[in-house]
Length: 107
Image (cartoon, rainbow, N blue to C red; front, side, top):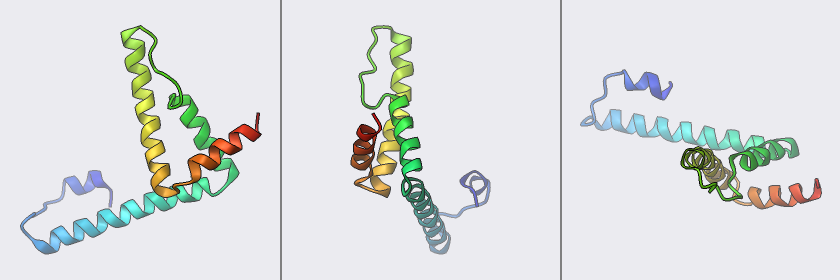
């Protein structure tokens, strides 16, 4: 069940059974998300896609341009990239190093 749909269902936080069911469902959902990402980075193609996204988001460069609106936009993109890096680090701690090495070979 999606988190959006779950928000509209009645939930009694004082009911240990409901709390436990919610916690377990959230844990299963998170495990599935991490497993999905592991599947993506298990292939060279998936790692190249993720590396390209990180580069596009600007996580490896300064976002400062001296123009407020552009800097804010760049920081927003970098924030997304940092989120992706965090997800990658949780799924496969060594994958960022692997992607860096692979990117150097592609040059």
